Length: 413
Ligand SMILES: Nc1ncnc2c1ncn2[C@@H]1O[C@H](COP(=O)(O)OP(=O)(O)O)[C@@H](O)[C@H]1O
Ligand SMILES: [Mg+2]
Image (cartoon, rainbow, N blue to C red):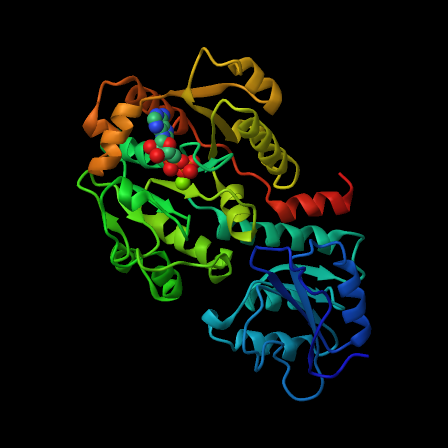
């Protein structure tokens, strides 16, 4: 039963969706038209939230009194099209939203008034099969791409098993990009409980990720600087405050992406040290990454865990292989587990190696200094330089996200 002038939800976004829901409002004076339009959009991806509004006497403005404006308005106008469309023309431009008009009238005057009211498209009834769905999906994808594109280079470093060397590699990779590569780089420590990056560089963050996330709505690029800790090389770090242990449900993936977008405005490269777990936060970051540097060592348990992780990335997160960069750290060419075997077990190639260097790594850690400053010419520094060139070697083109994938599945292509 439709309630007059009430919003009612047609589709609830599923709890698995970690993208901000795209909200559509369908408004009309005809309950029958609402039902038809809603069913015309039944194949939209699950993260799209559709509300209907039945307009009765009184206001013709379909957006009147709404606390939150939708991302898209589908306005179906009938006999009173003139009054209905004029009510929208009367709105100040900043309170209008992208709109599609569906009309019982095909007259050019109705079309002109729709355009004046800001309509992106005009559909005279009867609608052709799939016509509205195609245009709505296009607008939805434009909106999603705008929201999700980071416009910076994002490299994620993750270990296949604790102790593989992910934090050492993330820190020194970011340092090389900032110092030798002269780029504006932020190293983000997303290990919110036992983050170690500030120790690797002997820094003591006063303000950190949690405070930045709490205030993200009000931050601009300049204010965000106050949450970053600066290393002498120019590299900046965003990490947990040293006295704070964060639980993963204290961080929302939406807020984190908002923070990343802010960082992206002022920096060319973000390097993220990501803890080895798959949840909404980590999968959002993984889906956005240009490269995922997966670190492991030559051991059966490392191999088994790495194979599992790669499989989850491929199968569940739809991450193509060319975005995964496998690094065998502390590489020993005498080990019975050869690179060919690693490649075979992970069904992945090529594999990059970083040598074992206990002496320089210990010295770097004890002094809180990057490897480049301790041993510029050592094979480990050269290997990390090679890795830095590898990750700056080119951006991958736009990728469909999880919802896009679901949509294709629903459509069956
Ligand atoms: N290539 C290497 N040579 C020598 N020691 C290393 C190397 N890579 C990492 N280590 C050491 O291994 C330990 C674990 O490294 P870390 O970067 O903290 O791993 P993860 O972040 O994967 O848990 C550190 O104490 C580090 O000093
Ligand atoms: Mg670590």
